[in-house]
Image 1 (tube, helix red, strand yellow):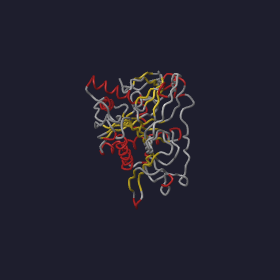
Image 2: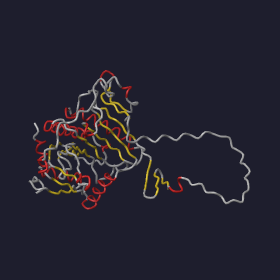
Image 3: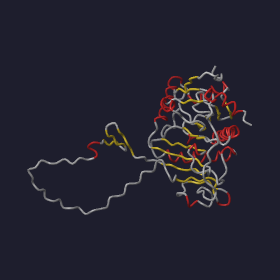
Image 4: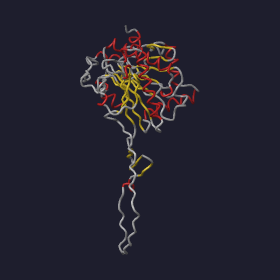
Length: 369
């Protein structure tokens, strides 16, 4: 049965959303390594550019939610160290007086061809191709969502309304960024040094890219094939199957459910999936955001109570720009704690090895005090 926990023998499981195989190897958890004390993220109120009163230390503000006494509760600013940047507008060429064409000199020598970049590099739109090698301008946006004026707050602390406001800020900016053309908008959050955080002040980030990464194209291809075969939405059918099984469910609300995926890639990986059909996060309803926010507080709070202040990443996965009407896809949140390090087998094979079966992880999170 799907709900049976893995015993002492390693097991292969296939992820229904990617068709990738994952190795569940709980016996490897007995090795004297695994997770230890988290590495603190440097930063204090005195030096933090995200704290109130330091607004001039960030790039110019893109959006804000007003706070009490004329202040702010959430700010969005460009990332000072972006992954991608907006392509600058071309400068207009200066006007020049028409010049008189010089008289051509006659010559008996054959013309000499001057090699140009386009002679060896084909140009197709924004892409340049030289044989097997293709490149393009990294045109996009990288924004920081400063979630609160409180330097020491975290999502695991709650409350639900505050977290829902953070999700709403991400949704608002996602709506703006997706209108800039084809590509992908990805809101995400890093927590802890091992997860990539460089500033302690609570913040999320949003990156928009001009291309759809291969992994996201694959997610949509698998979901579309499932829809062609069954007429259903893979992710909504997956939620129903998990709720029916129950073994991997962490918590559920009216419009969303949190569960450990059947082929979890890392210990305590958890997905939060809304149950109202929306392919794009930008189109999520306020009611769905409220339930997702409550489940994020529940899962991340349970993770902290269970294991301490562990590093994690979460990403809000949704349809690429222009794919908002895809009935085969569903936006959702993937929470990935950073508790183990990929070693040679994982890097060489591309297969994840998980030492905590998802049934055990879900039960522990479900029962976390």
